[in-house]
Length: 565
Image (cartoon, rainbow, N blue to C red; front, side, top):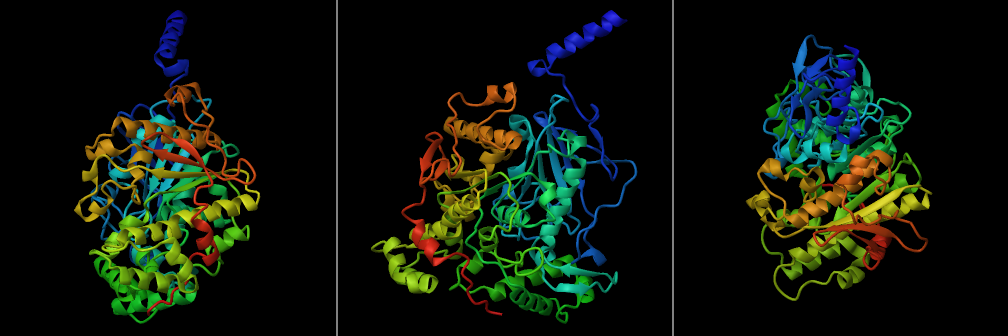
């Protein structure tokens, strides 16, 4: 028997990659015991999926408009094999970015774990927060499916839901709950949802193959657009600090303003009116249906929108700053050093503004209208701004306004934050730029045809997650080469907080032979460095934005336009 046993072990070692012992923290039946109960996942071929794992109680009834609570323990085995519903919304994203179903019961997360690993070296974790203007989207959608990235990067991938619209962003300040009698802060519930999901991952991910070592644990939080904004807030928050070790921000619109408590209360009063409730009457607000609440949330947004104040178009329901955990605007807080110093990656696409400007202005924009918009936006800087962004001689001005938006909302403030981190002696900042358009233009539906042939906002997502095959799209050879570069840098960062160092021989074997070395943003004094992803090959560029951003830096970001309540 002993000889036979040794023979089986030898065969087992030969059949596992690189001679490492195949190790699963769960059995072949894909059952995992969390602190709340047992779940059963699904074999997705590329990786194992646990889709729709509860991390919070359903925020319904008396739990609507209150801080999220951990889920109740359950008996038996909970199947987690399908995407969960997204939070209540009217989704306006391309189809692969929209949940198939929605529900007010939506506090679920999704986990993809590689098929095998070495028990001596558990996986790092990549926790991603979706974008969507804090208005729509969800963690359980095809574009964010983590099965391919988990396999390539040898990483546990997690996506999460959080409450949207008024459900997640209503502000009433410090109040007494009329149902429980407890005092709490009704503010930024969406961020609190995210933190509860982060805590679930921190406390339970070892059961799914994540690193259980509380000292060396490697959890990277990340997000795109509104998700990247959320990451910025978690970097500011001492309460979020112990739950992650590093961060990545894709397309963070740092140039947008947030609401003060005073403005947020006025918005809440408008919302209460559309709900048929007295201002701040929480019991009344909870008595309305989810559909009535969503309708009132959208009516509030429409009533406050002013086409002359373009920045308001981006977001209405979003975080409130000026007290508590978030006493300052993000850029102010970062400049003051009020953030957690962790390894950081961040960057933008080259045509972020196109999608927004073409959605705001559905027809051609005349030169006189462009000049008027720029004058209102820049005030004292108008003469310099019109020189830097001159209108085309005749015809549609939407492309030049898109360029202004890209630079002011995304590119320049992101570079500004990178410089702030360096000035604060941040040890590890990596900046990137992406200039690549989808070959599968049909992925942009008719409403988003302005993004055909452009490096549009959100255009990086199927590249990050390698997820186009789930939409029945194929990558070209040049796209595949760029994606392999991207996945290699990301995987190295997940494992080592450095995009240049493969953790294992297996990862080294997957990576392109001539992967350019990615220097830190401040690698050499007097210069800045960025990694450029493009279909012509990845490369390092220096002093990105140096001819454009000084004017906008002097003008300042997140300028507060008056709100029309």
